[in-house]
Length: 238
Image 1 (tube, rainbow, N blue to C red):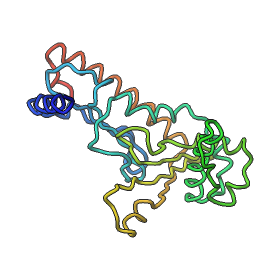
Image 2 (spheres, rainbow, N blue to C red; image 1 turned 120 degrees about the vertical axis):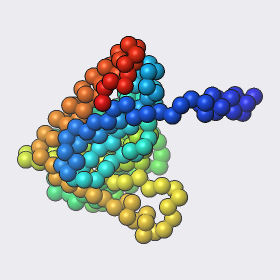
Image 3 (spheres, rainbow, N blue to C red; image 1 turned 60 degrees about the horizontal axis):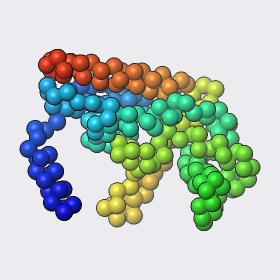
Image 4 (cartoon, one colour; image 1 turned 30 degrees about the horizontal axis):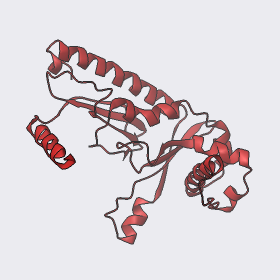
């Protein structure tokens, strides 16, 4: 019965015209830091970009694209990890890892996330510290490390598998990230490349400034498209 319902749904979806890119925007500079997004839809058809899977969103850090540029999510889901990152206080965690290498930061933050789950929910086995610097931390210090995450690897379809960390200092922000590793990749050399830890420094305050501006613009454009679609003028905004 479920198979037949799935088949009927597939037929209905196949009959619909393909989604068009109604709006494409980039906030910030690709060679420093930027948020880029597209709102998809069918011209003249009112849609809720806030709730429907019609938003593609990705980041640029020093010319590197972060995220799935072809995946679609509901706008609020696509924005969720970035909005959460805006509210994080990273000062204490940044001070702890200031002298760590990017690899140590990535391994330490991922371990701290699992350690917190173990402490709060007794999820076993207890994770082992990835290096001596992490092992030397007191419990209070371990608990603040997850605040460094911008993307934690399982946020949504847009950023599925991507892990990104932001470290704040007095004069710069250090963006540390790791690409996802597709299951179909089996070559040890290819896996090593995909698990390579990359990092770039960007001017202090850049992340919050760009993400806040992108959030505002996305919400305003979605409202404008919604109004235009109901008024029969959805193709008038580009």
